[in-house]
Image (cartoon, rainbow, N blue to C red):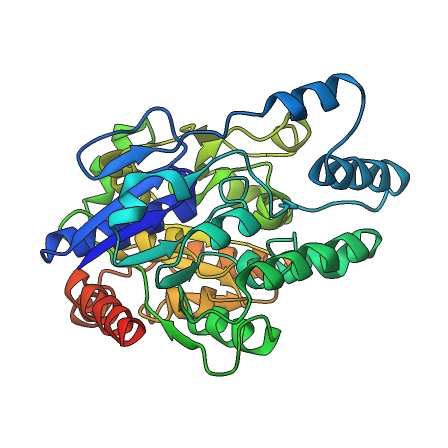
Amino acid sequence: MKVIHIGKSLFSGAGIGMMRYHDSLLKNSVDSRVLVTDRSTINSTTAILSRQTRSLAKRLSSRLGFMSFDEKMYKRIDELDRQFKDKAQYELFSTPFSDYCPEQHPWIQEADIVNIHWIAGVLDWQRFFKAVNKPIVFTLHDQQHYLGGFHYSLDANNNPHLAQIDAEVLSIKKSALGDRKVAVIANSQWNAQEARKSGFFSPETLIETIYYPLDTNIFQPRPKSAAKQTFGIDPSCKVIGFACENLNNYRKGFSDLVEAISLLPDSFRENITLVSFGRDPDIAIRNKIAMPWVHLGFLNGDTLKVAAYSAMDVFVIPSRAEAFGQTALEAIACGTTVLGTNVGGIPEAICLNKNSKLYESGNTKELASFLQNEILNECVSSEEICLDHLNLKHSSELCTENHLKLYELLLL
């Protein structure tokens, strides 16, 4: 069985998740390959997608000021955002158009299964599904596949000025799929439930939850004192941790963590260090951090991530919306207690750790209280997590077994 995965990046949360699925299939002798747009990555199982060459007619039309349908849509979005600039706040709005042509890649022609992951700006829905007559699997890393242009219902609800365009995008996507048979993999039970409720997929569509695999030979506890010293932190200091791809992302809630830290008594903050990794936050957020702060920037390798998680006494995932929460799972595997919002799939990510707690999204007072309690309780290590349970629920073997079951049902 030849499986081709289509995605955008290998370095985003969705990209990391896609590669963990892919690597688990390879590890268990499945012929799995990946198509992405990242120019920095290419090997025997990963290839780079090419863009469509614009026709002479399109180039001439552009020079004469005539806009294509997709260009008109982008212009409408921009105009509406400027009109409602005081209210418009969302992570992404993705249209169903693209200059990339995965349908032309020879790997697609050879595939038995085409597995579509996070493909904003990568896949032109109408052109792709017209050209590709292969069994299709959608893997949900967020909600975008079954929404219109928004990636989370939170953004759709908070930005009604784009509701009409969002509905148009949804209609284009549904029309492109038509009545073809597809299957869906969700990264959490919450995401699977939301996909069923959306009505985007037909009622008979196979929708299964397959959790991200995690290699616990890599993600495992390291001595905290040594891990802290790695980053120049006094071992006696308590460490609060945070991580995401981009700390400026409103959805990830880093500003809520900063606010909660400001509510802690001065006596607590004196012996606490904040450790974070991801793309740097803007200066407005940085200026509000009233405690020692070690920001490690964007970490691309697992070894440094494991050291960072191990240095943390408590890890916070304050997301306002989240389909699962891989960082929480990674932190728990490294022996760190997690405080997370009770949204989306986060409860499923942290349920393995009896010391971890959930709090209401946006409730910075509750988060501050939890943080203070953890510090008072000497940040009880979560190395007592049930590793057997984690290894079973997030093993590459179970991941591959569940993928193959779904693939085979789709091929019937």
